Image (cartoon, rainbow, N blue to C red; front, side, top):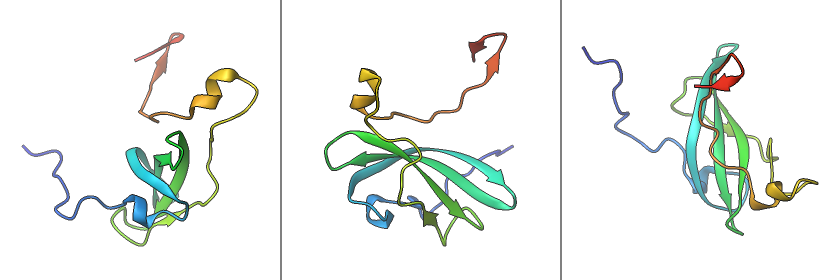
Length: 99
């Protein structure tokens, strides 16, 4: 039984599709929200640091709209934030830990 099948036209988004200068786009987290497909993208900025952006599509294949402003970006008061925002991989929290 086949649960998943790789889309033959991958990748569905590249750095050229983004509304901001970038070196690459990686590891999307995906969810269906209110009838649209929402991706959380790690975007490698031109300085090599990463930020997280939100992209939306009505069908998850085309007609993508990528928010030009990052959801999370390098910087802030915590020194660890200066290095950038890394992979938005899926996490499940149970009993105070991640799984």
